Amino acid sequence: MKCKIGDTITFKSWEKMLEEYGLNNFGSIKCNKSFTDEMEKVLNKNRKHKIIEVVEECNHYRVNNFFNYLVSDDMIEHIDRECFILNFDESI
Image 1 (tube, rainbow, N blue to C red):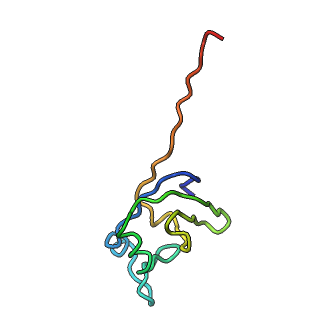
Image 2: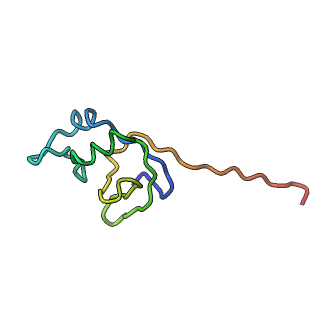
Image 3: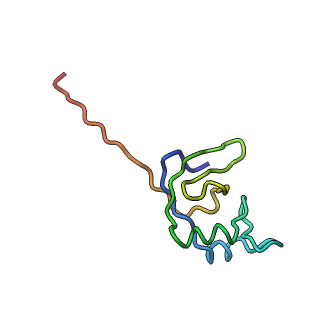
């Protein structure tokens, strides 16, 4: 799994996922965890979301504003990680 709690992800566009994976019989994108038309409505409002839960045994994530949906790595276009810079006082 690529993400950690606190990462901000950018979803691939519906068009890009459609081109890469195609549709299943229900009209959802055939990702590891199907990307539905309901998810697309939320996606159209904001493509950036923060990872709030990682469920490794099921190979999926939950993200803010998308909590009722399962998110898989193949839906993610970009990951922004929060980085912390530590400054050490060498005089100690």
